[in-house]
Image 1 (cartoon, rainbow, N blue to C red):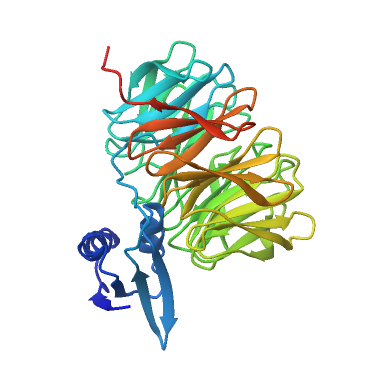
Image 2 (cartoon, rainbow, N blue to C red):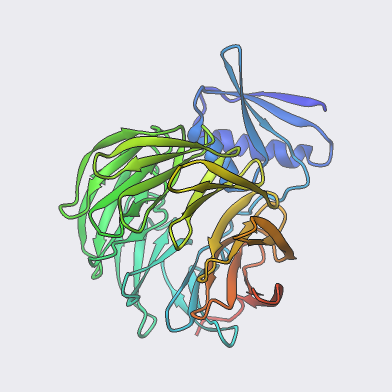
Length: 418
């Protein structure tokens, strides 16, 4: 395979990414690869390119770090603000971000848009409060969070955050939401009325924060500083940082709040932390570009999606030993487990498909075509259908889990304002 050299050392991560994207479209279909020299630990660049669905890998040879990009048949996300993030309300509404600086409220049973809610500029990720009375919307371009009263679907407040707010996380036992800002290396803590309760300094390039089910701790993975910031969620203060693997992005707590599992994208593994001591007690090897950890609802096993090796790693939560690797589609950006713990739904962002995986047999039982760049997943209250945000077409795919077929494609942004 022919290769095109590129030297990106010393450039800002956003400029590095811009040059790589230009090369991707220039070389697509030629069979050539890009070999770009970069810094030793290029966490921000590597993770951002993976998040957007580009086929990249890291090589370390003779003291030189190279990012290899292959413009193959995979399809990157456009990042245009179409349906990407979904949450499910217990009454049967599915909320999805959409274009036009709006959120769509979708009737899960009728599979139609009920209304649109005007929010901030370029909404990216959604979160429901623990009691489902408020919807939190992180707005990437207006640097704020919109708070929606779900009883009326009306905006009741907004609050300023750091730049490019990301992946809000609601407290399980208090009226608070935590909002990371990658560029500013802070977490903004906001209450349900939109009052900023704290702005906490964390590590470099914070990604997806999580709060323990008992409400005691908030763990902030810092992709750029390869650490977890430990936050006292009762007092809203930072206790310190804990080193984990390289490029941590997402974290999940066990239901009893005793353990936390951190996916490390650069070191291709999962760090297991004891929340009593905030220390790493085990490291689970995973696949290439480990991205998202999820625990089964019964707590017996854990899973991690591996961006670059196109599979899921499965481990036993008691022994922390890997028990299976499940091949799925290109770039499994997101996955979720059905309410009955029997089916794993996997969004393959790089090939516009969804895999249905038998959670007992650890095998794919169906691969369904959906619209471009499938991402986040939600379930209806009965657990009969999965809803998948498809960013490129700004649609939400509705999947019948029992019959393993796509029932509908809801145009999330189709209605006019009004």
